[in-house]
Length: 199
Image (cartoon, rainbow, N blue to C red; front, side, top):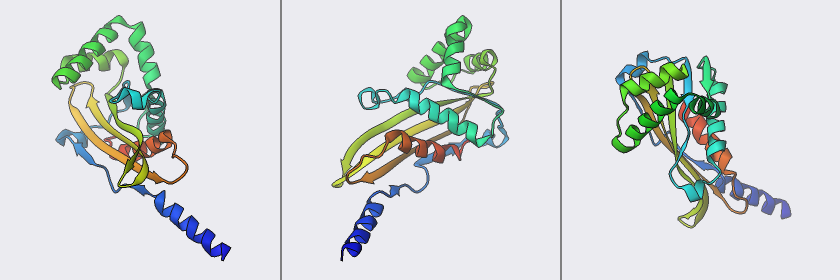
């Protein structure tokens, strides 16, 4: 009797902790992306859309992204955010170009080709990856407790400023007693997304 109850309990836990995802929310490639094979990619500082919920998560996400890209072995060099920030602080010209570029991108949704090219030349990269964390929380949906992480990624060609790829994805992991680790859920989101990245 006890053994049957234990087996039922394990099955319930398994069902409740399965990850609900089937493909990305969206993934769009530019027509030119089929001929786009960057060798050196910089990971820009991650944008956290909800600061209170995502406090302290930025550094963790940046490390997971860089590590996941290195694991793929698609690129000759991955410049992680920390290395890019060091260059940004040490090089006034790069500092100015990145600040202006990101300002135009955020306020006008315009990837300035001249600034993009300058960043590529100064940082010695072919492309840069911009990531925003859209969701990072524990919540309740339809009477189910879930851990949820959602992200958007955009890959730009440095020499032209063209958006070559963008994608969005989220994973919800149900739980009963023990909260899933959000960085682990984030790692799953990132790994599923970068499969679709041009390389």
